[in-house]
Image (cartoon, rainbow, N blue to C red):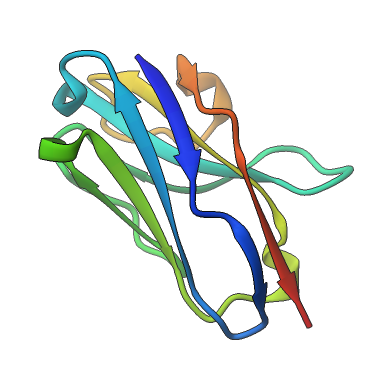
Length: 117
């Protein structure tokens, strides 16, 4: 499967962005999906994930999926400057939950989110 992340950009603190990750290939509905982020000089960190059955993590940001569109989303509200990072989507077939990068087999190219103060 190939992944294409989009939706990043520059936003003021307190604003919102919705990231998208479009998957090509077959059987998207059988893939668990995750979002990670990496700020300059820091390790890649977990943001959210959703299982192939649609069970998602809860947190500041909301992950969702539309299997008809082969797309997973990350809704980010009340953004803070410390949310500035490159955001990556990832996929692994039959995954129920994956909170570490090593649990994923496929990665998108990343989309940059910059939050200004």
